[in-house]
Image (tube, rainbow, N blue to C red):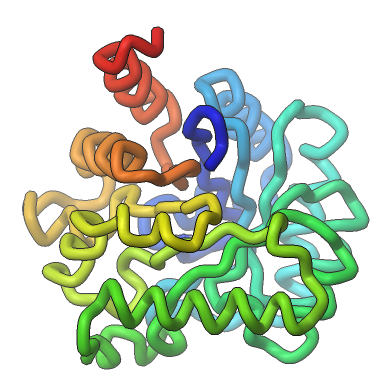
Length: 271
Ligand code: 8Y7
């Protein structure tokens, strides 16, 4: 586990992500001034990692071509890598995007499909970067119909174990790997909360745990609030995730999460 929990700020260069889509991308492409401003603010607010995504994984989101995804992601990576002292994560399942981003200075590969696409393991092997293996039950369009688990935590652990093994078989070093139970990716509300309650059971992998719960529908289901009004409960869940072993929390609201983690650390005498 990393010494202190790290905040990963979400930077979507997509037209259609569920809570911040279209803010940094218009018809004419990536808005570089806004992107740089947003990214720099997140770093000032306490993000150690920025997660750049060029393809929405929201169910029903428009598929993007490799060229479109490359244009979006590479514009962001080449703009931010030389300017900000932060780890740039690329949220992609596309091996070509992984390769080019690594070449331009990306520092983490975040694949919600856990490097299952043809060529993805080879790209990760070449890149030699930290990589996040996330659980998702099926492709985004079908995942919410695939929520039949024997025991959600044990089944997610079995899946992650298989992906870790696949990475090792491909020649990738275990020290590069992070695991993520994939909150909201093919899980009912109850299963998501079960997973968070029992997050500590993932400690048996002895790998850093990444958690993304920020503004997700599991919060909307409890509070009845739209995505933009889920900031406080998102920060609460981020603290709980860290308290249960998460090393990295992926969030939209960096300053609020940093404050919440700071007061939580103070209660532990870690000021
Ligand atoms: C996660 C994620 C998203 C997550 C990791 C959203 C790209 C959906 N969620 N990556 N990506 N973990 N590793 O609500 O939970 O932001 S997209």
